[in-house]
Length: 148
Ligand code: ZN
Image (cartoon, rainbow, N blue to C red; front, side, top):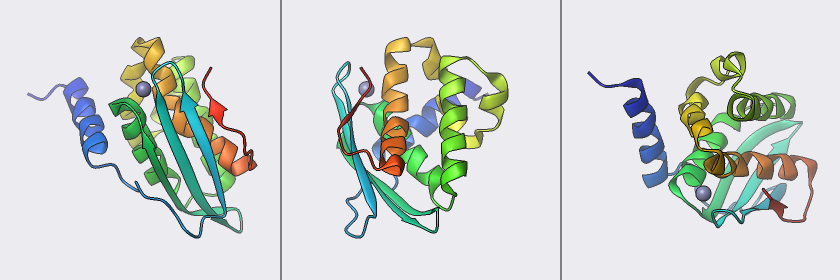
């Protein structure tokens, strides 16, 4: 029988091999750069926001499997969300990984596949990079976001 942990691994491997929304966006209304010096992950996040709704989200970058899978899952989950809903997802994702918050984890649906990362503190930064960059793009901060 397939272990739940293996299933999580499968989703992460799939999103790393075939990242969703991995493209530049010509008509983005906002973008931000993220960098995780600890691992060397870099990404540019693009957002198209209309009437406080994320109409489209995409990213380009070079990073490890965790950072790529996390960016792929993040873009997939914020498209169609309001900015308030996207910020709440980030809060829950953050609390799942940094506070081991089970209630937050249960609210995350598919994003909870990354819960296993919390056992590896160095990799938590790989998983949260896309989310910090999302926050910067929403807030329209133009300096590169660093996890350090
Ligand atoms: Zn990484």
